[in-house]
Length: 124
Image (cartoon, rainbow, N blue to C red; front, side):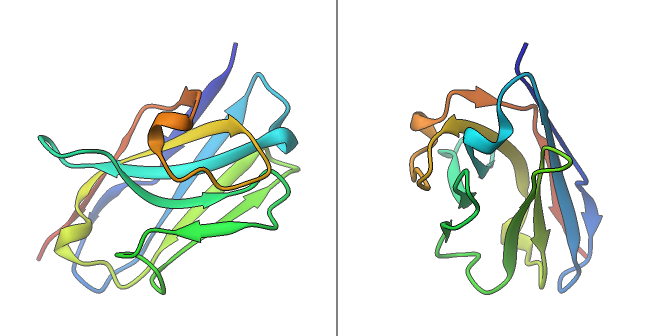
C-alpha cells in the first residue's frame, strides 16, 4: 500500500521558518517525482515545489521562489520542504504527492498518490 505522510506544519510568525517532511512507503521511491502543493479553502490547489525522481530537476511556484527549498533523501524515502521568510499569504494546508516521473509535473492533476495535509499558519 502506497503511503505518503506530510508533517511539520504549525503556527509561525511572519518572517519565520518551518521544515515540512514527506515520508513515503509502498513504492520505489527513486522512481517517483514528489511535489508539494498547498490549498486554501475555496481556492484551487497551488503548486509549491517539485523534485524529479533523480533529484536533478527542481521547480518552484512563482510565489515561493527564493524562499522555499525542496530536497529529497533516498536513504529515508523522504522529501523535505524548507520554508523561510514566511508570509501570511503562505497560510494553507500543504500536501505532498507522488508520480512516477523524472521530470517535475506542474499540475496537481498529474500526481497519482497523495498524503494527508499539514496545516501551515503564518500569523503574528
